[in-house]
Image (cartoon, rainbow, N blue to C red; front, side, top):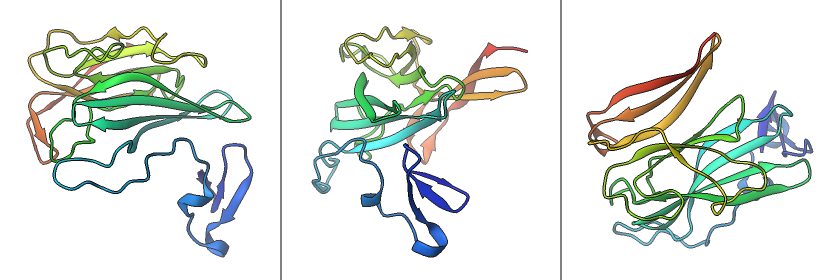
Length: 209
């Protein structure tokens, strides 16, 4: 659902409710893009099965939303998925293997992904496995890029490495756009937990004015 000027609406533009008159949005009132297992947390170091985390949102030139999110399979197997509104329905599919969790206490945490805000079919991910096959790379998280078309899924996408042979993790890709510049940023360095890290913000200029 989109919130704008005090109103909630669906991707189709259909109004849902007014915040002031009708109150906050309930999850049951929004569109369902992906339906998880519905199971609760399993305690210890395990996340709920088939649980999803949104990590990237952008709109295309026609104003249609594109979503990037992760899906938890197990502590050693997370996936990247993408969904977009084609004007009539949500098109959702798996696009890459996200690899192992960053640390077991937060077993759904991954290296995350980013969508180009000007062209959300241009996608950047962070993974410690081959994003096409899921094969363990034996190294830390690397950054990858791909063009993901409307008909693409994990079987057709060609992921190109942006970083290779790294000695430390490369996490949380992010695109910054403004003033004619487009810059890809990410975190590079030791990252043990969300409160224990010694990472540097590094980047690459993709476009200049």
